[in-house]
Length: 310
Image (tube, rainbow, N blue to C red; front, side, top):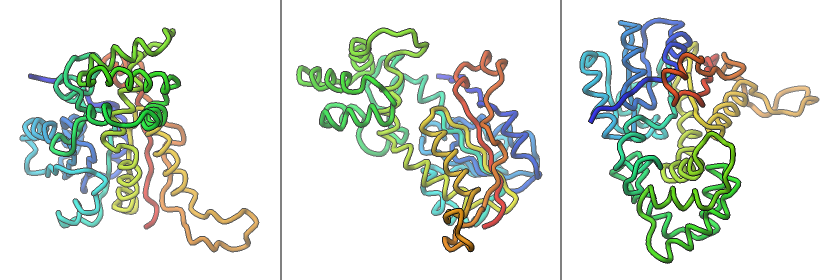
């Protein structure tokens, strides 16, 4: 089975990260290798380390990147473990970093991965299929209160209580095991609205984020990535929903500000210093032309920062 894969905002990524040629490029979310291919084509002197937690995606990426095998090293792992990954590969600092936080094409378009409410299959949602249980386990075993918290906190879903209540009622009759079961239940739970998105969108997002611990991994991985960046190096992060973007924005802002002492304090006593400069004061978004070619890029927001000191 082939998957259509169009890297989001690839021109902007190259423009903002190619200030200096060559060096070591770190792709924290290699996926199917779309950005990596564009980066390696644009700079014959760059070497790239590609990390991803999804072994199936890495297998496809490896085949797509075989023409660049002398300049790329692929690692199966979680970018939250970036310090260990770099240490194991004898690397202390890198020149450029990219993190595209979107769900990959293979996860959305392959029914049996259980990510999409548009494709009927078993509910799974694990990015690393070798770890843990499918999301259907939590769906059928978490308490009502925990389900409400998950759906509300990670999906920003206003109808979280109603959806959670109906999940509990339904699972008492028979386990909820398929994407269609869950999507149909949500459609019946949520009042009709004029929103463009499917009623199940937020709940499926919430369950995916929860299952893969995405937000905590982002906080940990982003902090480690900035520490691994050389002075003068740049990091680019592409997010696809407000929860991710808020984490990136807040961390960039905090690390740019540095000192957190009260304004009237005559001398800094907190010891915190500014270590980055935010290049994109407002996030970049895809052009209308790109959105037409790749509708999945619609919600993308790209933020870029440059390391100023360690």
